[in-house]
Length: 82
Image 1 (spheres, helix red, strand yellow):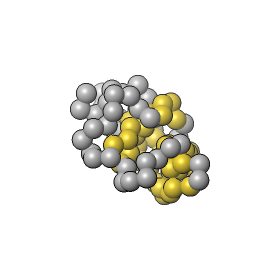
Image 2 (spheres, rainbow, N blue to C red):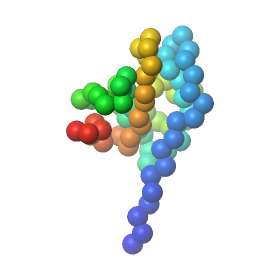
Image 3 (cartoon, one colour):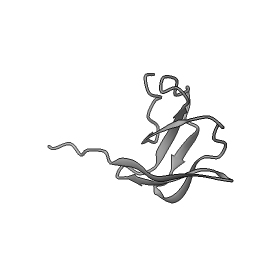
């Protein structure tokens, strides 16, 4: 039995007044989003959970003023490195 590769992509990122918005493509259904400002600490829990793939998805309603990095994972996946 062949395994199916995950397809998880964030496209067209942009910062708007209501948050950080992207297009999400996923073949695994809803996703969770983790945020890091240093690529080392992704936090204990996602910043948003169960986000449906689609256009103009707010993945961070309160993005930090400095640089931030985002990681999308299948819903329920533990934090990176955890």
